[in-house]
Amino acid sequence: MEKAFRKIGVDIIGDAPWGTHLCQFYETREDLVDILVPYFKAGLENNEFCMWITSEPLKVEDAKAALKNVVKNLDHFIKKGQIEILDYSEWYTKSGKFDAENVLRSWVEKENRALKRGYDGLRLSGNTFWLAKRDWRNFTAYEEEVNNVIGKYRMIAICTYSLGQCGASKVMDVISNHQFALMRREGKWVIIESSARKRAEEALRESKEKYQALLETINDAVYAVDLSNVITYISPAIKKITKYEPEELIGKNFFVFVHEADREKLRNRLRELFEGVVRPFEYRMVDKDGLTIWVRSFSVIVRSESGTVVSINGVLSDITERKRAELERERLLADLEAKNRELEAFVYTISHDLKAPLVSLNGFSAVLQKEYESQLGEEGKHCLERIQANAALMDTLIASLLELSRIGKVVGTVKEIDVVALLKEIRGALAVRPEEAGAEFVVQEPLPTVHADRDRIRQVFINLIDNAVKFRSAERALHIEVGCRQEGDFYRFHVADNGIGLASQYHEQIFAPFRKLHPEIEGAGIGLALVKKIVEHHGGRVWVESPSAEFTPSQAEGIGTGNEGAGATFYFTLPKERRDKPSRRTSDPNGWS
Image 1 (spheres, one colour):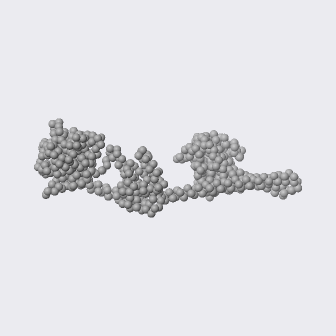
Image 2: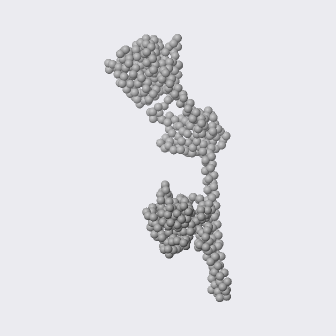
Image 3: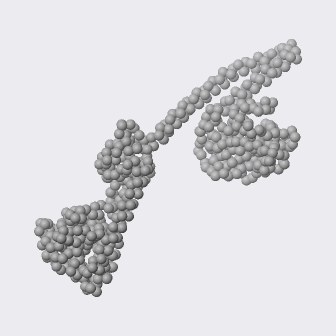
């Protein structure tokens, strides 16, 4: 419940929060008038429902007369039902005896009705002069229960006790069941606190000190604003963020320090907050030096127990450096995108420009071979064959270069791919079929269904299997195995072989475009670069491992060859989650997007 302070009307008490439960020890009726009349006057003036339960020596008519001396329109308050002044027999013992449970329940019902009628809460007082000795223990238990639960309600209570009826032990009972007591000493009212009130205050003070120490050490600023957006509290950390001292901000409208371009966005965010949408929000502020800073705030609405909104509280974090890094990253990505577009245009231009002389070269060499072959001799024929072979290689390189540049630019439809069916389909499409090379081709089933660009994934498997066929060993029959495992949110595929293998220092180099470790092997050296780019375009990664002398292929993925130190295993991952479009990330170290 909110700890809104109320004006009590008694100078020595000052203001006190809802849930205050105190007692007054009196000797004369003047003592009662001295405390209770200003007490109820303040309650009437501050929109509270008031109940005054009287007994000797100040009865109902006496209480009304005393209150009317300072509240001239008392009859008006009585008529509209804002105050009830009752004899104890109409409240405490109306059933003929004191029923603690019933009395406590009646107070709560009065408070509920008061709130429904629009009053801020219930202010009450009850005189215990009527209390018989036989009822003392029962009434003491009742007061203890009131003291335990009153903090849950919008109530303030002063219980009055006659000193003439209370011995030392009863005085101690009364004080222990109230937060504090009022007693006149040498003509002046003084406050006597119970030891339990003192302990609570000490615990509250220690808690406040720890909380304050925490607020002074964290980098985030804690704040509170009222419904007019006026800052009512802000922690010392705000100085690190805005260079303002907290005292310079408290009492000012929060929007004064928000960057003009973001004020409307923040107002819209606050409207969402009142609609129940709670989420962080990032916007710009202006610090004491007039510089723009970025902040991230997380706010919540604070309501009273009755559901009324009383404030908006939140935490403010400085994210200026992070935002600068993000903006720089966006600038660099934009530059990279522009450079990639330039590179793509360059590749297409160069490819087009190279195609024309290649056509001429092939045409003239064909004429030369047809018309003058008999005059060339063996050396001339050899040179002509070399010209034609290199022209064909140049044509292949140009085509490969174009293919590499197209990955990510020409995006196929993402489909469900049955990998087992795909592998059966592509076995016959290899440059050298496994059967022709005397190879054993093993597919570890089951294999998953993946969501990807089918043509591109088909190209990945073709290139990896064809690579295994190309680099088979002459010393043993070729074994190729394809399998898959689940690793977190990814499928990890492998294509393993027992071929000539690959030294570890070349594990990264082989994925570079046009990198050929064996020049005598046919091809343009573009296949693994294509594999890498396709896999990364789909959000995965690719790598290769070669077994050491202690790590045989059979230990790697189940290839039972027994040939130590042979072969290589290529791995690549694909995400399990479906993506409508493949990723456009640019992680190729050679600059290919």
